Image (cartoon, rainbow, N blue to C red; front, top):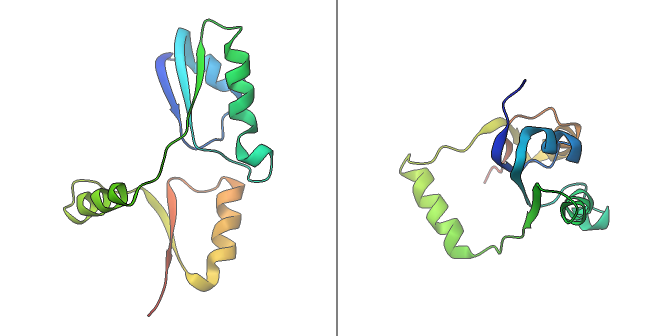
Length: 120
């Protein structure tokens, strides 16, 4: 039997609800952070289905809608510059290759994030 968890933070938005539930213990919780598939229920279709299904389960499937604040980005910048936080960047593309980068993200062939560089 594979490992089962009390908590799963679903940030990538890729695993199916069935797969997430199999990863959880019987009373575990999966938290959906953010959306995916822009255009399909504003990118929240899977998360909303999970929240509705959760009403009928012992497992909890919850949504986390984060509010973005400039102060949070300032703090992240400071942590990155100090070397205390290292972002997971799979690939770096120049601005002119941004369409390729988006296709790679959509295809799911990226582990981590993609960075776009802008020459000044």
